[in-house]
Length: 498
Image (cartoon, rainbow, N blue to C red; front, side, top):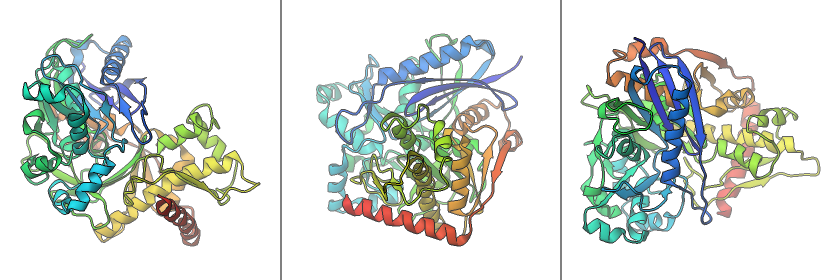
């Protein structure tokens, strides 16, 4: 009987369900989008009910394709938008408020107050993270302090908290399991990177009660089983969980120290495997858990840098400026011109992430002339997506003390050949694109399959992974230096104005 792994990839704009067979081939996938909410400038929210409905609809739709019987699914893997935080009722499973999305900046003032109090060094040493509204800890605190009725429910023991993986595990298991994995826990500012447990001092800083948080477990291994999920039998093991970027690192089989991947999604995120070493960045990058397999006593770590707006910039070009009708049209429009013609777009639409960490920064478009066409703005958008990543890779190389040899790429925008060539040119390194660009899905499936021993080890996964195309550097060093100089001048102007 053929065996399949079901992946649930719960992302920022929608949920993808995918079925992978034993050979590592994705046989089907379905995506269901849901609404984004912007109640105030800099605020971003999701309805937890919308998220859950998108999961149910995607799984229902993929099972209707009749690729396999429900009984052929041997494991479920979850990968998710990280840092997004919510509270819900322990007894009714009803959320108390909308989820605060990772992009949301509403806790900027609180994070700044913590910086002024002098605790950022301690927070970074213990959690690997900077004090920024990006991470979950300040979001949990905001929800506790600002959601009507929560204080009373807290006293009654009804409130539980989690990131999206925890919420999905809770719902998939019929409210029987309240856990998170080490990768998601490492994005909260509340977990000690050395002990892989909730840290008493960090909890105190963010004013979070320990008893509302989930139990932390490994990324691969049976965490619970389905109970009452529409269209699936009870008892399917949920045996792989990882935040989307760590799942992508695992899905790219970046198993060696120094391996690097870049995921082009709503934001762009670059992770480098540092093995069992917790590398403390000197360039404002983050130290995070890459994964932990159930059989391993120690975790594998990574350093990470993320740009908050990547594919979201293309969405803005499509929906805000209405230059294109669908996201993939950006490549055609950008190819109408030979270069950016001096136009610079800094897509700080929700602040600037690594290595700048300027939450107050706002997007800018500069260098416009009478000769500027829509194609130049489209080209500047693709350039900006690549140049943000160049800044992060440069910072990584400073931390590592040597050059990165190459870069594996994935995510929806990695299918844009022009963008991938620009990325290779601005970083001066070759890019490798896999045959399966949904590396988050691959990682969720690999972790879940390992968790039930569908695959016996990472060696088998290396054999499954296949490359699609290599993008080689075409620019001269002089051209690269000129392009970077123009970009950095635009970045400086953006951060000064903020």
